[in-house]
Image (spheres, rainbow, N blue to C red):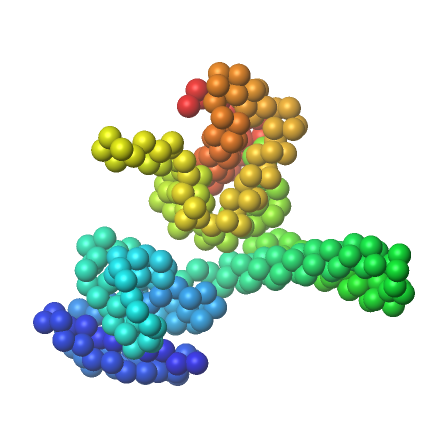
Length: 321
């Protein structure tokens, strides 16, 4: 794996080079960039490509260098129509994006290693669940075929695979719990999160990973936008009068977990249920009322991040919004 790097100068001139996606390659990249910018006016930025950019972010953080890690969507959407795909052209696109949006960029630091590891364990758990679901579907199909074909051997294999995946899921979950328990700060934050109605262990783990221990988002209202819970108006002039709705640009995993948490909380018959019944009786769409509850769950999780006591065990009165 190689990294394509492009240095963009104030006069819009640029210089391109390639480096290996290794620690040694990162060092060569920094030295190359430092030679091109001897006055230390250096701004490093890269596209967040998941596992392929983790090493670079951690290396730059270790060196105390400021950098911007941006999503491909934010980088590519302002460019408009792009024909073809080329890594060298892509690196120049990123450099121009950094220069164009310099005043609005947020310089970051790599997430702590433990949170990155929890994120990988969570992703592994999701993959195992998908594989288990696929095998269970296959078992149902084989049972249908059992009326006309001999599929006993195939059924045995599929059932053994489901049993194996169940064991691996338990191992992954135990490893996640062990790593959280080893760090007192994370353990206390998770315990506090789980006192919020509608928040379970998986939702708490995901919140800790996505918010980097509640340090990534400066305000709780930023997170609903990230998770696809914030409603936006769709109107223009006199011809476009769309209803207010949430955006499809969202983290679907945490959105699904919050949806399940909100539904479970409503079934439990607590204050969320009273709020839901009151709003639907007033004519509010059931999904809109459910979305409002998800936002309230998020606000309470963020409200409890600096509290030492478990004050969120009893939900406060719900507002009329």
